[in-house]
Length: 373
Image: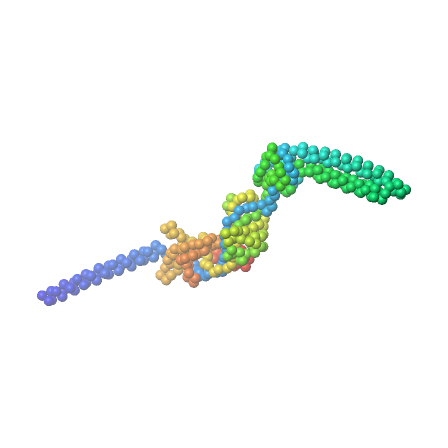
């Protein structure tokens, strides 16, 4: 009986070992198959290195004209006509509006009458002065009488001068009835129309220059000490076809923050004129500093099952590594997770290796020039 039991146990152990060998064989086959499935066809390898990169801050902004004029009236009167429409381009000196001259003409006539009166009064005072001068010299009138005649003469001279000055002012107001454009630009808004009553200081229209546009953006106070007028900035305007990168400079920074927002207004001027209009939205990228990051060329990224990654070189075969990607930096893209410094990646060709080298040069030049990619 004991011999029978031992033989049965041996048989069961051998059967278990055979099954275990089969399982291990299957696992090995599957492993090899998976390695072949994930195997990279690439032969070129490159050691990953982190490099200094420009650290940039992006801010939304709006295009505004670098010069804006609110056209106002200098006199009171009803608007006889408006010679412009919203959106119309105007030249400096072009007629914008006409104010009814009736009130001004009435004022001119009134002051002309006062000038005539003052002139007549002065002639009479001159005659009295000459007459009393002769009488005073002959002792026929007292000094007090003569002094009063001289005083009346001087007063008539001053009254004539005042009347003439008022007449000149009234004549100059006649020119104010024709309102002219002070600059070249476009009419962005009309505030009054024909028949409205214009008043001194009342805004009739707004004109903006479009030859030179600026982007007005707001920067958090934590970054304001990192930038200064004259710094390089890159712009993109959403409405412009292709959203090209526009090289620009910071033209000015407001010296105080906006109330309650802890932000500062910054104005950015493109280096070259752009084909855009005031009111369009854009994005500005400000160079803040330098940070070490891993960046790879965009076209060396492979896609597997809808996920993006790269092949990592390892003993026994390359393996596919999924990556978490960040901001696009020029021709490269930042790797946030999935790739560490000194890891070896497999590339399709020497051309891809050259892309890495070119990317490193581009970032190095950007850091030296204080530019954003």
